[in-house]
Figure 1 (cartoon, helix red, strand yellow):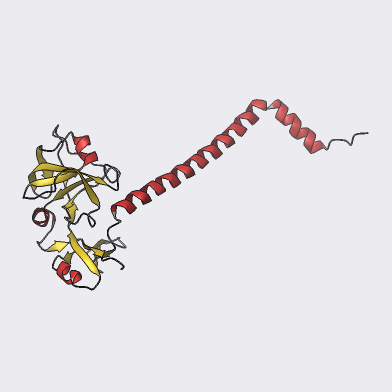
Figure 2 (cartoon, rainbow, N blue to C red):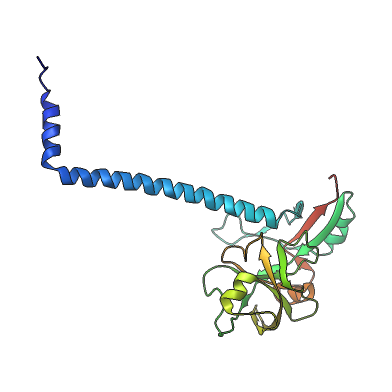
Length: 232
């Protein structure tokens, strides 16, 4: 003789039978939610791995970075922006035993104007400019086409920004810094094997132009990039 089914179980079964569609919808929502969460986590891990690889490739030749210990802060900020360092520190760093090379990294805001007259990147991703570091191992960007800037007004642009703005080697355009600068594209570059650092645009100038247009005073840099010698 079968044991009697407890009343709570009979009520649950009856409720499920009476609301099959609602139960199916709830079950489907749970399944889809779990699938979405799993997909998001997998995508996040994939993106992190891709960025780690990209930045690892870009910075593989830099063994140390010299920066100021002081920061410029505004009310409400906890970290702020690092104070610049003097480019004359390069000579000091180069004399340190075990250092193979050192170079200043001069950085600032610089937005290129595309072939259609519109600023590349709009008001979205960061638009950066800086000196084109001549030591290829210290430079996070790799020259893919053309040549490095050799005289005032010549620039290298990351390939993704050039394609977005319809620019090619030999084109003349405007770089928007605090003072608009007329520049000629002489080279295209990649970052970590990609056409750019995500959607960020980068324009590489001569060191003299970078100091003139991107810094408050000549002789300042955001940091000093350092490459160690063999066995260090």
